Image 1 (cartoon, helix red, strand yellow):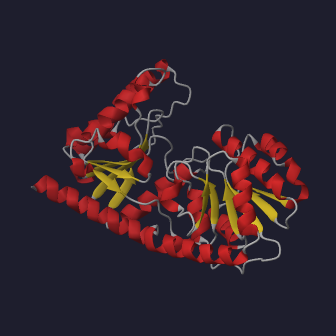
Image 2: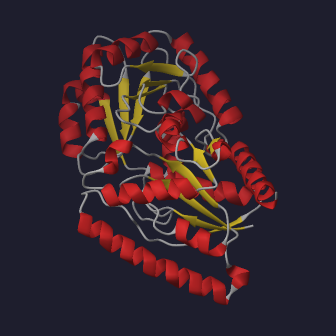
Image 3: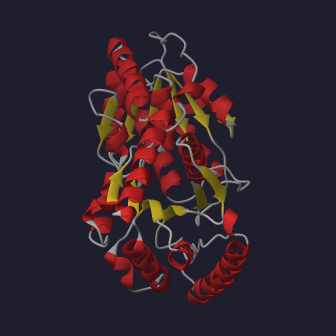
Length: 368
């Protein structure tokens, strides 16, 4: 089946790496492995971070022209027209102005992966974009939920109660090498996150405040990531002193190697949807200590593959990290359980099979 793939927040070919771009690429690969022929339908970004009504209106007008162009193209060459439209990640700051119109005009299924909806956005700076998200959800044949926290807001808008399809976040587990033996004398901690203002900076500040309470123990910290808030983050982590190694931004293979040489992943995860970096750490056989934010609990099983703490609580984060630093047997057991869980529930072939089943079921429903 030809699948028109669209990511309104950040297209898969965007030059700046991020978790969002990573997941978009993984969905494309999962669709290929499911036996379909996905292609990027448009690179139009609908992202509006400032809430400017005029900007949103301009994006909507541009999207209408893009829709008309796509429909002209596919009506003139129907052999190239999509048989299903697949939109990855829409919310009030990045609505889908294209998919609903194109899928309705062509009479094809409309599928959304990762959507969030909050009624409180009905008024205010993003009101028009919020309404576009609502319209898209009401039209969708299926919504694939990567984060269980999104279900309540989304499910109430679906025209078919069977439209919500839970899919655990996933990655290609084969890309993560067998990890090195754990260091019991001086555990190697690691955090993988971009350095930008907002929630990432807040998480780094909690991390610094927590680890500053553990200077009586032997450990080191490796930070993988870079960005415009690096100066503020270095200041927040300054009390840790020379125990930190800053690796900067790394490509996927280098991140996997860094994880393979660590002992424990630590990340406060403030306002994290679920945290691809946390899933990567577990794929590499690392136990995870994280804040219990959003859908983090969907991928980190507290007490089994890691430990979750109240979001933003530096004291609790410090106490929990101390617990695993001094207990190498617990770290080893959790790391093994984490790697097994990823391969069982979060691996790319597993996601591809589930996507294949979803698309087949949509076809059967339409035929009925």
